[in-house]
Image (tube, rainbow, N blue to C red; front, top):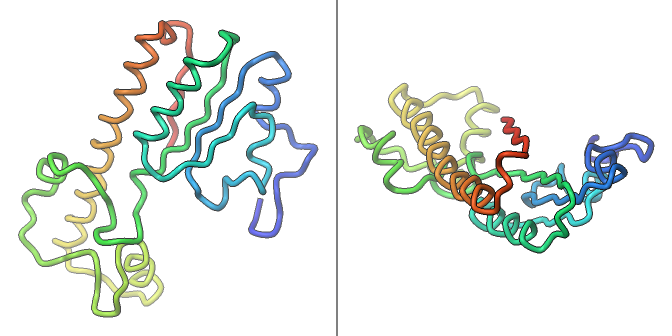
Length: 179
């Protein structure tokens, strides 16, 4: 798969293989360019929802899909992009309590933007491309913000796991998390 090349039609997706075996298949993904339906990633899904980059919306959608499905075995692909750097303000977003817990030590003046108006991901990419660096304390702060984002996503995933448990779906499910 590349910008000008989709997944070949003769390459089966996991969703296609499972659908052929009678599974209900649901995809809930971000609007990330490389997993859009145009590249073939929606192939084999009964439903493939492209949603905003917020785990809580996707989790609510997944639980709703599970409430409405016909009790066949199911496969859910959830692409949660929340921990990745954004393009506004600080590179990584997290709930305030997690920022305090992981990055509350920071007393520097890094805002996530520079004098060029580059912020977050754009700033980090620009630094790499220009072979520039930040002070070590700012780098540690950015790393701490990433850790805070992971903690925030962990809390949101708890809602999904609690929802699966409440529906009696945990004991017969395989849950795979990759990063």
